[in-house]
Image 1 (tube, rainbow, N blue to C red):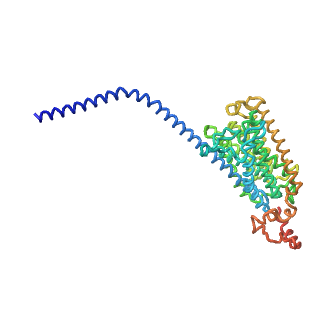
Image 2: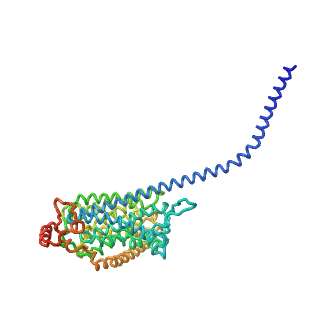
Image 3: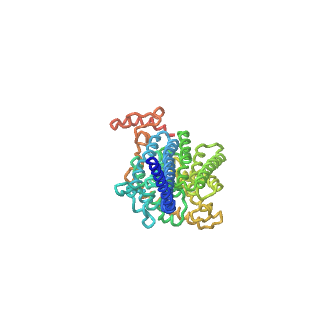
Length: 505
């Protein structure tokens, strides 16, 4: 009996367990739809929010990488300018040219940090200059002890941080002042160079940039088209260079109608190729984003075509004039094409870019002759390349702008758009030229009055490298010693100057 009772008890326990499982399963089945309905929306929302955040972060990372890398290319153009100018000047001014190009970057950075970036991209004040962001004081903030980075700037909606935008635009600013050193090479007082480079980076260049690229700038509101800086960079640098060269006067032993030969065309060629390479950062990077990859490709193609046709047209033009294949002219022709397409690289079709380069390659050589006729000494043709071809590039947008590419969907004159776009381009460029020329005279004349615009006359005798830097790039050809620094021994100094004078060619 006891055994039977024990067996019955086990069966009851199994039965109760089965019933408990069955009841639990029934309850779970009944509540599952409710649980799923309660969980599913939250899960979906969480997933979508996470995906959206990840996508935004990825886009920011790509855009930041793009802008920084292209900014590095633009900054590398400083090396290109240094090599180009060092190759085109005479051997007694190579060290001075390299020193000016190098230190201009450092001086411009400080000026851009102090006031330049704020004036250029700060919140607009009546469309003429920015009013905030000095010393990058609004580039970051603190929230609950955490550092937060600001995006864009008061006058820019660029999809990158303020720091990234600052660096990219600084590289452009350095280019503007470096253009000027070429036209003023071989005879500028080094102190004067430091001063005018700072003023350009702190005030002059930023004001023009505000007009053109700031969202509240008066030219920007008129839909003035200057994609990568024909007006903002090249016109500013070129016109400033022309005024500076005019006020300085010619280099020693200058014979008009006979440009002193470049002392090292190897340097000049390397410098030009570096500039061409860096120009891809200059033009393509001005998109400030990787959103439109097709446009970036178009810009790269237009840039390359214009450089190529500029080089070819300049080479052919000079060949038919003097029956020689002139390397210097081909180099400046390629640069002319690059400058000529800078404003419209995102607004014109490749055929137009080819035409712009062809015209620019001839214009640069014609303008060099005109400047020579006026007896203004421009050792590297800075105004012809940057000033004249920068203006050409602005006008070209008004002639060849494609309605599918322009900001306001207006076509250029030659594409049936009438004079609307061309009129804005001409008026805006004229305003910039007038402002820059007046500002340049106001900047250089006080320096000239103080005696720190042109180097001391002694430098014309012994060479600016020796006088300003106590160095020579070619000590085996152009030796230096301590005699020129000995004020007590006039005979030795006179003898030394006499020996060095024939080195000018």
